[in-house]
Length: 107
Image 1 (spheres, rainbow, N blue to C red):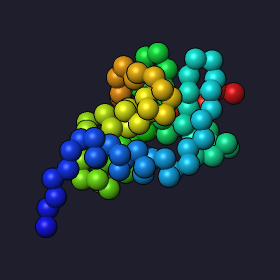
Image 2 (image 1 turned 90 degrees about the vertical axis):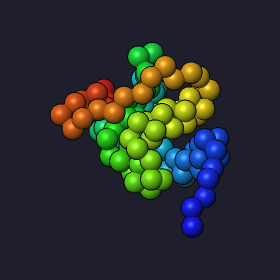
Image 3 (image 1 turned 135 degrees about the vertical axis):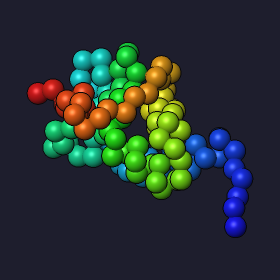
Image 4 (image 1 turned 30 degrees about the vertical axis):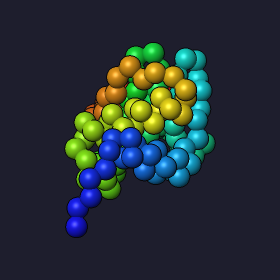
């Protein structure tokens, strides 16, 4: 059986899913990092003036769990970040495995 749901209903479910991940926010300079634990070296999400950078693993997790294509998952994660930080997210990007340094937390 298939169900049709609106984008706002899907956002509510994805937001609840991401809220249950218990991300920790770390603010450094003008950037906000979302990590799984305080000891993490790399963030799952990094947000700043340039937009939102998301790890490929998180995009894949959301895509497979909710049967979405990757660009829709990126957009949903970006909306969640904007909602969580109470700010507008200009754009979202998924970094490749070779560009993981974009998500490395500074010392």
